[in-house]
Amino acid sequence: MTSARLRAGVGYLFRAWRLELRQLLRSRLYVFLSVFLPLIFASLAFYMFRGSGRDVAPINLALSAGLMGMWSSTLLGSGNAINRLRLTQVLEPLVASPRSTFLITLPFAIATSSLGVYGLGATLLWSALLFDMPLDVQHPLLFVAAVLATVFALGMLGLLMASAFILYPTAQSLANFFEYPVWMLSGVLVPVSTLPDPVQAVSRALAPTWGVYALEGAATGTVGAAARAVGMCVALSVVYVVITLPLQRRFEWLARSSGSLSLQ
Image 1 (cartoon, helix red, strand yellow):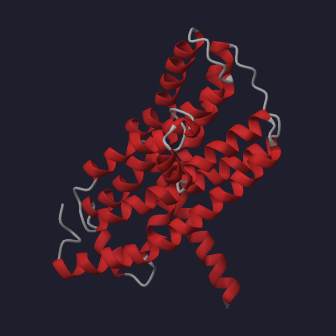
Image 2 (cartoon, helix red, strand yellow; image 1 turned 120 degrees about the vertical axis):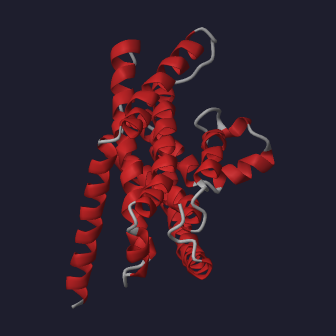
């Protein structure tokens, strides 16, 4: 019975993830955020650093640009998924169903961050073709593990922030505020080591920071540091899940009590 329920749960998550991914691919906004926006970021970064004289690995620039687009699509998509359920008037029946709200929203968060993988691959290919960047990943298997860990981390962080959308339909405007700070704190825009010490402590509490370390380490060949970063990325993602579960239950209870679950 347990194995049957497990297979049913995995099947549900896969089907929901695939359905949400198809819906996102039909949206021009998400395609732009996940595919074309990272190319713009990469082009700007290469032109800025080409004449600056700073010693920055080209592949690190491309990875940073891809991660910027990945976080933008995750943050926007996770919140909009819940708002879309509300607009189509299916949020109430889903929340009222026996299935956990976390399992309902989990495929949305993973799908939005998975879409960013397209952008990451397109950015690396774009940088190789246009800027002659060597498309040389030192440890491909570790790089794939780092990509999967980063996708999971971004999805869980986006889901944690999107939990407020269950209670506050207008929270999307507040979520947009967190786009640039996460870029800065996770080391995508500037190295974490250049930030003040108290800010670096906050950066280390963000799973995307370790995702950046893992991707860059796997690409450049620092195996030990990359493996540790993958482990930290997964561990912090689990912490986000532990925080999100009671937070969603609390927001769901408040929304039911105030009758605001279906408000637009």
